[in-house]
Image 1: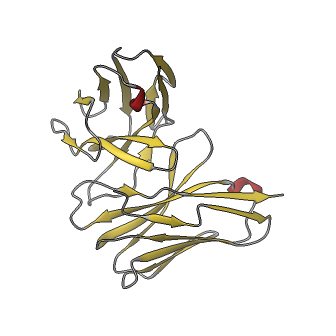
Image 2 (image 1 turned 60 degrees about the horizontal axis):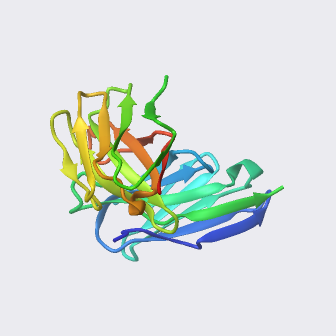
Length: 112
Length: 114
């Protein structure tokens, strides 16, 4: 079963707006990661946040983690058409061994 | 710098045929993984190899076998393909110096089983 669940499933915004995607998970984690997938391509790692961190930034990306609510959010600021992609969260559970568990993803469309 | 290379990119099989998906990484990573991606299901782990010489089952191993040929190469074999194995397959690798650091993915193999 999937550990992470993204919300919303699909998001459509205008260029320049901010995009927020959420991820909820069920069990305790060591870290949570966000990946991006362009159509027809493999996933690309965006950012990793550890269980003892609450917020992390990378360029236009901001990730938050609330372990008490078992949730994370990915904020993309000042979005561009090139940000159009699917975004996945992946969790490294404390009992998952060597396995990352991926959610079903959020399809983001940024309209020019 | 090729990263993770998968072959083939596309494959069509008939039910019952066998094939091997090849994966190689040139980043000297210890761990390698095979995932499948189906619409609405996200990525599901088929098998993984934490280090050279070891392999372990993931979430959906039935119908598949793997071989960690050396540190660079990790192949996935379908012995008798079934329509349920129609999917996009991704190979990934990681350093795993600390558990579950980021994964590097190949570009995928789109497999159709008729």
